[in-house]
Image (cartoon, rainbow, N blue to C red):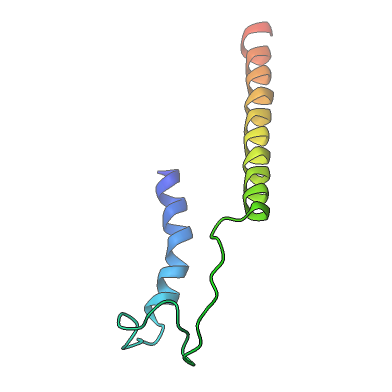
Amino acid sequence: MQILWINIIMDGPPAQSLGVEPVDKDVMSRSHHIDANGRVIQRGPVLDGTLFMRSAFAGFLIVIGTLFVYQVNFYFYFYFYFLC
């Protein structure tokens, strides 16, 4: 239930924002390499080295934080239920 609630809360506002955005009639017929003024857009790599390192570091912090919370709660409940 908590995951469903988080999903509803996190997906609702962006969906409502996109729902009231004006419709672009020629969005499917336009090339994605040319902007609205007819200029060619220079594309770079999607995942360059800096973005990869930032994503890896953020993932590392999330893993360390999750393991820390698990470890603290495990020792707290082990001590509270079995040693007291």
